[in-house]
Image (cartoon, rainbow, N blue to C red; front, side, top):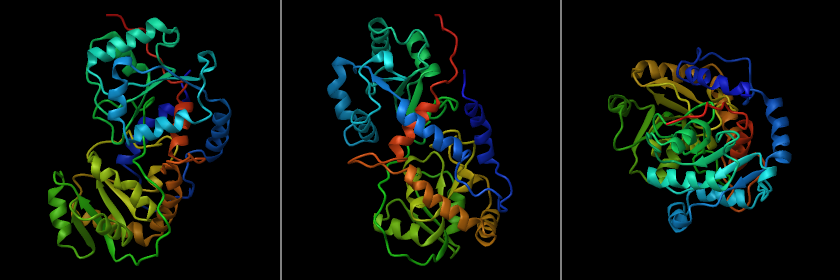
Length: 356
């Protein structure tokens, strides 16, 4: 049976691309259902159990090398030291299939081996299984890979590979964020800040904003100190969806009270925790074809009608869910939010058996 919240993801993504008017909303909560979230979170802590399959023997060294100091390594180490692990597969809520980046043929052989060795895939066709992959798995006519991609929960980096994210079942890691030490407040001198990448699709808008004194525009070559100063001294921080380097700064912007403005040419379906958090309450989403005057007018209206202060406050509050605590995971941090999203997807849709 599918969790009803999964069916709303498509409509949420459409809402983010075409949000309602920028006027203030009556709702001031960060969550779609605050009561449900906190109650279900506690249930998850008491009941979620994960069984981990052994990784491919011939690639354990490759796995360690590929994931060293990465977000996966952080997640994996946190999982191994958590109370979610069970060594009894009969007690498992979900099954984790760890594997490094592999050629499709090697991945197919590994999946065949797991299915032949363990009896836990067949009853659900992999719906109660999950795996991690930030790389494109790619198209395949192999039955094992098709079932993995269609049925199993994929945990991916944000933004996820194009056309490989299935909203009703897949989730994305939050970009790495360690909560910063308390910093002295600085005046917000700019309406907007944009640290653009070398290859940016909105070149025309960048050039237009350069000539506007209310905007601070810097290249990705600026130092981290300059970047942080730009974020802290601006009310809005601009990002182009799909630019990995740029989107990593989204959580930094939220942390320092710079409301994110995400420029996109299509509905976004892979925002971290997008079925839990009301992203439209902490960020603005604008079309990539928006003209400078229209963009600036939207930002000014948001700033002047009281909406900005609410978005800023909720955005700062949301950062507790984006923080990765390397020494020890904390309640409601990014690790626990990933576990919670896995928990609510344990009843995801199962596709029919696929025959060659």
